[in-house]
Image (cartoon, rainbow over all chains, first blue to last red; front, side):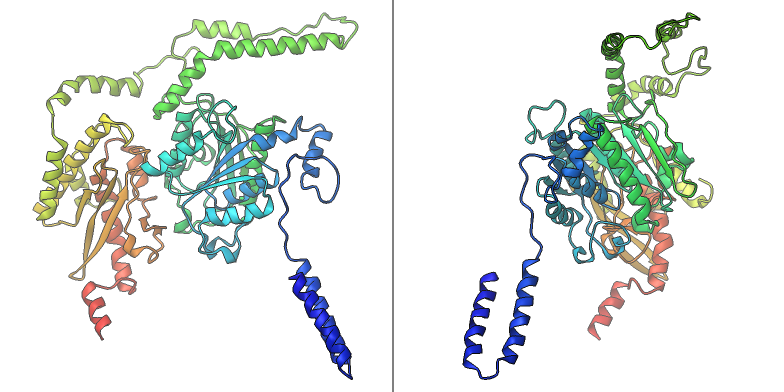
Length: 431
Length: 174
């Protein structure tokens, strides 16, 4: 382009000399020069950065992020380049979360969605009208790669609730090629930004099976409240243990309408929820502050409830129950680690010297954890009930098990052939 | 179940309930579940035929029984409107119900999610959840699809969004 403009200007020079009245040529020349300048400020892609630098210059895309270290918030911000985050659902929340993580310089993003961009999405952030008709994953990759070419982007255009989609989903989560030395699955965190119960249950299933920590997010159909929730399989409630909306507002999640059937949405609420979600993710990944186990957002009253939910010992999800058992078995190990850490902390505290030189009233701090543990162990083996309570009726699971055993003999008799049943239905269909 | 007509209720009570709680990833248990699905579908189809209320055809289109295709129809003003019917068994089945799709009328009604998935959220999903794992495909058709067709097809026909195939053919000729 530049070469062309140069040639054009040279030609104008020649023309100017041969003409008697140079005024029109002068005009032409100024137009060409303006055009040449305009072409220079065409968008340029920035090149990749090898190492994050904390140097404060205008051209460093990471200077403000690296300043988090200088401010004493994050120990080692550069670790972010080693993290992989999977985002399921690239809608009003997921796309904004993806942009935030991209701008933070996350190592790798995996994006999942099967929808396409529509004009009806334009009341939310991120997607542009010229992307209408593209798949949300393609459109997201297009924008995100421009914003930060350092991020490794992988996109999956599929429905994770089908058998095939779910297989692709779990195998993509377990692919460790990005960081082979890391323990666990191939990703550090899964963010669920979907808009329906079925997809949440599918994410829940995958994460329970893979022992994968994940965060769930949601915005109410009236667009004025939302929530985020941290789910650590076995340690906290899984999605099948207690769907968050049942807890938050008494509404059964299953009765919620979805986007297509015209739920309301606001860029503000979705942006706030995406912000809360990514903030919690950064705290979790980079190990600073307190990671919220659950954080609600009620925009009408600006109320932000937080709480912690323990897993449901009668959860209907088998994988969740397995994780709960593992978590229970690993308790002595965790306690030992916590104790060792406390002792280490205590020894450093002693080095610093005691806070008060004299202790006139003999005040001392006594650990009451051991006492509690002992009384707990003495109570019934039923760990699901608080101390002092017993069940009047057998719990529902046991009741169903008994029925299954009672009817077990009957099941063996029924040896229907699947092919035979298929033929019967086909025969009915043919008539 | 308040608000359901007595006909649907009495039909429902005669569709055999299922007992095996298994999804497509559960191996032998899923085969057992499939057998139960077939039995309840056979019973329901027979019942419809004997009551002169035959209104769908459905069969598994893969050997694993995870994808189902067929037809369903609805009679309005003595004209029969027929649609392709399809759905996948989700991996979280039976905790979550199958999402029934009528791809031909995708985009013609608001009571539908993208891809022609009919909206079951209010009238059916709570029932399914309460009756897991006893409800199966036959119940989803009886309590999910049938009332949807009864509510939506008359509106779609009267508003001209869908045309009877004879009308469509003649208007194309003229």
